[in-house]
Image (cartoon, rainbow, N blue to C red):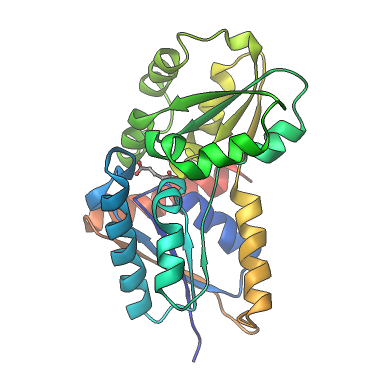
Length: 257
Ligand code: DGL
């Protein structure tokens, strides 16, 4: 029987990864679960996020998925280890793309935009410890950007004003690159680029995650040979959010064309 790949996020953010997966794996079928009812995860406790992640993985397992991709940096930081121990299928997570940002760094500062939880938990702090001395990292928690994206707002004055507030205390000219460490923020890439009008390099973990998915599908002999591929969207909050996910999927695909 043909099996799907489960993709999960707290809401709309992981749709950006779903878009990249659809492009890279056109024969695969995906089931996307957005937990907008409980978004934002970044303002919950790690225990709450772990419980919600377990619930999401179980819902996807009930649908018979062969693999789960946690398209959420926050849920990965809080719960990836736990769900990998608990469930018997390959589970892939995400982390902010610090390494490529540091490797290309020419001496400027690197702003990592993510949820407060991602920036606080050990996973992230071990990661920056590993690359200590290779560049100055600025931690920029941006919870309101998650909320704006959940409302379908990815550009315009509300986003620009919020970016101004976030970076008020920093010298923008010194910032060489921005790491988008939250899947929700990828929709805002053009806004972030135009906010830093001196031009910054923007990094995200999507390509690395897609490559990891392909490697594991091959390693576990789970690649779908025939297709046809496609996707189904489930949202814990409402039908309207399901529709919104499809609109954002098209928006993201058009943006990246
Ligand atoms: N999209 C999520 C991430 O990548 C989390 C956003 C949230 O729910 O706070 O971290």
